[in-house]
Length: 112
Length: 107
Image (cartoon, rainbow over all chains, first blue to last red; front, side, top):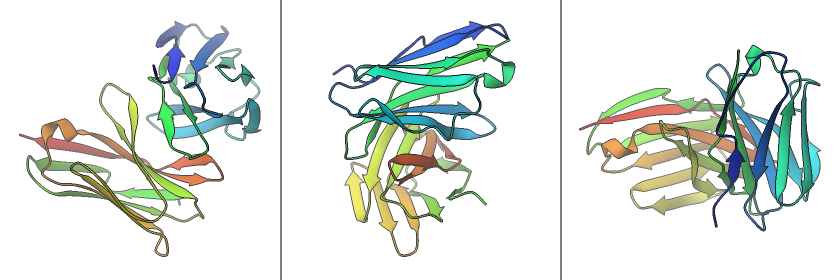
């Protein structure tokens, strides 16, 4: 298996633009997680899905952030409009019910 | 106070030394994870444990549920072990992370 796939790996955008991050989980995994990592706050859970259904989105910072999982093999995290404080590394991870999570390589987002 | 506390935050060791990183937590958990993040940024799961002890190569992880404490040990440390080690607790399916321990092993 190729592992968790994220795209793009790097994204540089201007303030106010829409940003879409993509994730393909490991085939067969039924849970998907979006995390954000910054120097100040470390790793934080943004949202997670079980069987494509959002279970906990309490970590989503504000209405500018939205996430979808239209099917078991694809998820998106969208920021609209983006702001400089959104600059971070965004990780996607997937797991089976055993809870061990497999992380993707991350997307490094820079908002100027 | 953070729900997951790691110590030390930074650690420098000489090659060959025995290393211990500690993690304490204050919430009920179903499991505890130890993760490794190399300078390139990728995150790898080292251990997931809910009781006792696990060993993988030179790495050993222990957990004491009653004391809400876990340790990660590295025996015969090597410069390639240099990384950030992150403790995370699983609470209802979601992970809560410690702030990480940055380990540097000098040759």
